[in-house]
Amino acid sequence: FSVISFSVLDDKPIYENPLAYVRSPESGLFLKSSEYRGAQLQYLEAIIGRTIPVVLLQRSSDLKLQLGIEAASWSILGYDEGAFPLITQDFLIAVPLMFRIGSFSGALKFTHLSAHRSDGFDLLWEKSLTHEEKEKIKIIEEKENISISPPIKNYSRDFLSFEIARETEVGKTKIKSYVHVGYIHKIFPKHLKRWFIGQGYVIKHSSGLFFADDIRYNQDTNSFDFSVQTGWLFAGEYAETRFCLLYYKGSDRRGMFLGRKMNEIGVGFFVR
Image (cartoon, rainbow, N blue to C red; front, side, top):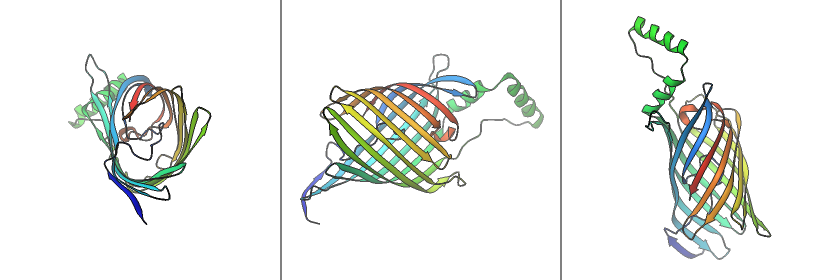
């Protein structure tokens, strides 16, 4: 097609990832709480991520195409006697082909996502054991002359996904609705199923108040997972900052805890 403009390394991507999706690449820091093996735990989640626009093409029909790179890491930090042990980390890297035409925008993405256990995971597992469980483990270790540690999950996946969104404006309120579908072509553990589909909304008022939700069916855990955020959003020239409360209900999407049913609440901020 006839290109009328071409640019490299623009300031912002032409497609905005869903705010409430738990694996959107952005940066942030949250204090969260959820239940693990019968105990209510508090922990920090530190997120470092960004979508980097690389090449933008635009034609006279108002169609824009942009190739980018996305990278992010989610680190879970516990607390133990003044220290913050690293429990687990999830890493993401993706190549999105984004588009925008009129009120529609979206992205076709190829993504790699993997999880890695850290030393704090052993501490969390040990502290969550009952006295009876600890005694049983001690007896087995002495009898068999072995050391028992928590199970390691081999979690990795490469997947192709498509997202499309439509934006409307009602008075001083901007409303964005979107759908998302994907297929995991390479997955560990291998026995898990591979499709996922979801939809959600982002509602922003000119005062800075916002609300966002995301609901997805993940076939790998056979679960409907729901996430919601609400708070204040401040849009600057080069970055957007959100101070918000969040709630998540469904299957844990962190690789080392995949499949654990959870209710999670949190408070903190995001920057993208």
